[in-house]
Image (cartoon, rainbow, N blue to C red; front, side, top):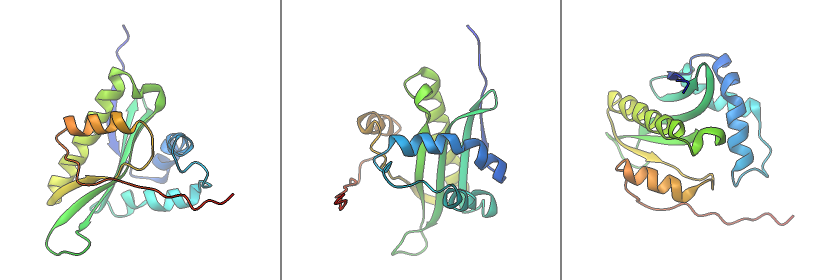
Amino acid sequence: MIQSHIGLRFAKTKADLDKVYPLVVELHESSGFRSIPLSREKCNRFAGRAFTNPEQHALVIAEIDGDPIGFIFCSVSEFMVGTDALITSVMAFYVGERHRSTMIGGKVAIRLLSTVIEWSKKRGSREIMIHVTSGIDIQRTDKFLRRANFKVIGANYAFSLNTG
């Protein structure tokens, strides 16, 4: 059995965004939002916050032998209608399809989540909220997050206005 090294690192440059972009495309094409055109420029602006403002935003990339297989993007800010309470919001959490249902994929997911928990603690965040909106493996995601001691506090609902 060949052992592969799973590494996690914070994105620091545009080259990191370029390296993880194929996973972003895979996520987008698998999601319920695949009918919306994906903009690389917009994606780079959004994710680029991780290295232009690393105290508030983080893009953590999971790699095996230097090849990205997963990522998580989060931001920390005050609660939208409150003061003196920081909340971390996870906007994207993805393990590539090739590894998702494997033991390696599970390890990667746990390590990505653990990294965000530690990152959030260092910033004084009171809570972490994960927005599950991709429509990919919702039951598996729910089971994983519950096992990680996350509590369900609501749900995401979508109503399509697409008339085409």
